[in-house]
Length: 168
Image (cartoon, rainbow, N blue to C red; front, side, top):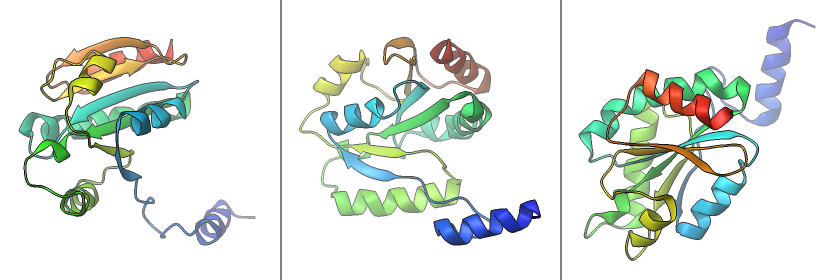
Protein backbone atom coordinates (compact mmCIF):
# COMPACT_ATOMS: atom_id res chain seq x y z
CA UNK A 1 0.00 0.00 0.00
CA UNK A 2 1.27 3.46 -0.84
CA UNK A 3 2.77 5.40 2.09
CA UNK A 4 0.50 8.39 1.50
CA UNK A 5 -2.58 6.15 1.66
CA UNK A 6 -1.47 4.75 5.02
CA UNK A 7 -0.81 8.28 6.30
CA UNK A 8 -4.22 9.43 5.09
CA UNK A 9 -5.92 6.48 6.77
CA UNK A 10 -4.08 7.20 10.04
CA UNK A 11 -5.16 10.85 9.93
CA UNK A 12 -8.77 9.84 9.42
CA UNK A 13 -8.69 7.14 12.12
CA UNK A 14 -6.83 9.32 14.62
CA UNK A 15 -8.96 12.38 13.90
CA UNK A 16 -5.99 14.58 12.99
CA UNK A 17 -6.69 17.38 10.53
CA UNK A 18 -5.11 16.77 7.14
CA UNK A 19 -2.09 18.89 6.34
CA UNK A 20 -1.33 20.05 9.89
CA UNK A 21 -0.32 18.67 13.23
CA UNK A 22 -2.76 18.26 16.08
CA UNK A 23 -2.90 21.15 18.53
CA UNK A 24 -0.59 20.76 21.53
CA UNK A 25 -1.88 20.21 25.03
CA UNK A 26 -2.63 23.49 26.82
CA UNK A 27 -3.49 23.05 30.47
CA UNK A 28 -3.55 25.11 33.66
CA UNK A 29 -1.55 23.32 36.37
CA UNK A 30 -0.29 23.78 39.89
CA UNK A 31 3.01 22.35 41.15
CA UNK A 32 1.53 18.85 41.52
CA UNK A 33 0.15 18.98 37.99
CA UNK A 34 3.50 20.06 36.60
CA UNK A 35 5.31 17.32 38.49
CA UNK A 36 2.84 14.75 37.12
CA UNK A 37 3.43 16.03 33.57
CA UNK A 38 7.18 15.73 34.04
CA UNK A 39 6.86 12.25 35.57
CA UNK A 40 5.05 11.13 32.42
CA UNK A 41 8.29 11.81 30.51
CA UNK A 42 10.64 9.83 32.73
CA UNK A 43 13.05 7.93 30.51
CA UNK A 44 13.28 10.83 28.08
CA UNK A 45 15.49 13.89 27.99
CA UNK A 46 13.39 16.96 28.74
CA UNK A 47 13.86 20.69 28.31
CA UNK A 48 11.45 22.72 30.40
CA UNK A 49 11.18 26.33 29.35
CA UNK A 50 9.59 28.80 31.78
CA UNK A 51 8.21 31.76 29.85
CA UNK A 52 5.29 34.13 29.28
CA UNK A 53 3.55 35.69 26.29
CA UNK A 54 4.24 39.17 27.73
CA UNK A 55 8.01 38.43 27.92
CA UNK A 56 9.63 39.63 24.67
CA UNK A 57 12.87 37.60 25.07
CA UNK A 58 10.73 34.51 25.79
CA UNK A 59 8.76 34.93 22.59
CA UNK A 60 11.94 35.71 20.60
CA UNK A 61 13.66 32.46 21.65
CA UNK A 62 10.59 30.27 21.07
CA UNK A 63 11.27 29.38 17.39
CA UNK A 64 14.76 28.08 18.27
CA UNK A 65 13.39 26.09 21.22
CA UNK A 66 10.69 24.51 19.04
CA UNK A 67 13.20 23.67 16.31
CA UNK A 68 15.49 21.92 18.80
CA UNK A 69 12.50 20.01 20.13
CA UNK A 70 11.68 18.75 16.64
CA UNK A 71 15.34 17.93 15.97
CA UNK A 72 15.60 15.67 19.04
CA UNK A 73 12.19 13.93 18.99
CA UNK A 74 13.53 10.80 17.33
CA UNK A 75 16.11 10.50 20.13
CA UNK A 76 13.47 10.72 22.88
CA UNK A 77 14.04 14.45 23.46
CA UNK A 78 11.01 16.37 24.69
CA UNK A 79 10.31 20.08 25.12
CA UNK A 80 7.68 21.27 27.59
CA UNK A 81 6.80 24.88 28.30
CA UNK A 82 5.55 26.39 31.53
CA UNK A 83 3.78 29.71 31.09
CA UNK A 84 3.74 32.33 33.84
CA UNK A 85 0.87 34.21 32.19
CA UNK A 86 -1.44 33.61 35.18
CA UNK A 87 0.85 35.67 37.41
CA UNK A 88 -0.47 38.96 36.06
CA UNK A 89 -3.05 40.66 38.29
CA UNK A 90 -6.69 40.62 37.28
CA UNK A 91 -6.50 37.86 34.67
CA UNK A 92 -8.77 34.85 34.61
CA UNK A 93 -8.06 31.30 33.53
CA UNK A 94 -10.58 31.70 30.72
CA UNK A 95 -8.80 34.83 29.42
CA UNK A 96 -5.34 33.29 29.61
CA UNK A 97 -6.44 30.01 28.00
CA UNK A 98 -8.07 31.92 25.12
CA UNK A 99 -5.00 34.12 24.65
CA UNK A 100 -2.69 31.07 24.80
CA UNK A 101 -4.71 29.10 22.24
CA UNK A 102 -4.54 32.06 19.85
CA UNK A 103 -0.81 32.52 20.44
CA UNK A 104 -0.03 28.80 20.04
CA UNK A 105 -1.96 28.58 16.77
CA UNK A 106 -0.37 31.73 15.33
CA UNK A 107 3.17 30.65 16.28
CA UNK A 108 2.69 26.99 15.32
CA UNK A 109 3.72 25.82 18.79
CA UNK A 110 3.80 22.02 18.74
CA UNK A 111 4.83 21.25 22.33
CA UNK A 112 2.73 21.07 25.50
CA UNK A 113 2.02 24.36 27.25
CA UNK A 114 1.39 24.18 30.99
CA UNK A 115 0.08 27.44 32.41
CA UNK A 116 1.25 27.64 36.00
CA UNK A 117 -1.36 28.85 38.47
CA UNK A 118 -0.61 29.12 42.17
CA UNK A 119 -1.06 31.66 44.92
CA UNK A 120 2.67 32.44 44.71
CA UNK A 121 5.65 31.36 42.68
CA UNK A 122 7.98 30.54 45.58
CA UNK A 123 7.13 26.82 45.53
CA UNK A 124 7.95 26.31 41.84
CA UNK A 125 11.06 28.48 42.11
CA UNK A 126 12.31 26.45 45.08
CA UNK A 127 11.40 23.07 43.56
CA UNK A 128 13.30 23.69 40.31
CA UNK A 129 15.95 26.14 41.53
CA UNK A 130 14.60 29.01 39.47
CA UNK A 131 15.84 32.55 40.03
CA UNK A 132 12.38 34.03 39.40
CA UNK A 133 12.49 35.98 36.11
CA UNK A 134 11.74 34.39 32.76
CA UNK A 135 12.89 33.06 30.38
CA UNK A 136 14.49 30.18 32.21
CA UNK A 137 15.22 26.72 30.83
CA UNK A 138 16.15 23.57 32.68
CA UNK A 139 17.31 20.23 31.29
CA UNK A 140 16.10 17.06 33.00
CA UNK A 141 17.78 13.74 32.30
CA UNK A 142 16.12 10.37 31.72
CA UNK A 143 16.10 9.66 35.48
CA UNK A 144 14.27 12.91 36.27
CA UNK A 145 17.27 14.84 37.61
CA UNK A 146 17.94 18.48 36.66
CA UNK A 147 21.30 18.36 34.84
CA UNK A 148 21.53 21.85 33.39
CA UNK A 149 19.88 25.26 33.61
CA UNK A 150 20.07 28.50 31.72
CA UNK A 151 18.72 31.83 32.99
CA UNK A 152 17.78 34.35 30.33
CA UNK A 153 17.21 33.93 26.62
CA UNK A 154 18.99 31.22 24.67
CA UNK A 155 19.31 30.14 21.07
CA UNK A 156 19.42 27.02 18.97
CA UNK A 157 22.97 26.03 19.96
CA UNK A 158 22.33 26.58 23.67
CA UNK A 159 19.10 24.58 23.62
CA UNK A 160 20.76 21.77 21.63
CA UNK A 161 23.63 21.57 24.13
CA UNK A 162 21.15 21.37 27.01
CA UNK A 163 19.15 18.66 25.26
CA UNK A 164 22.33 16.67 24.64
CA UNK A 165 23.07 16.79 28.39
CA UNK A 166 19.51 15.69 29.16
CA UNK A 167 19.85 12.71 26.82
CA UNK A 168 23.23 11.46 28.12
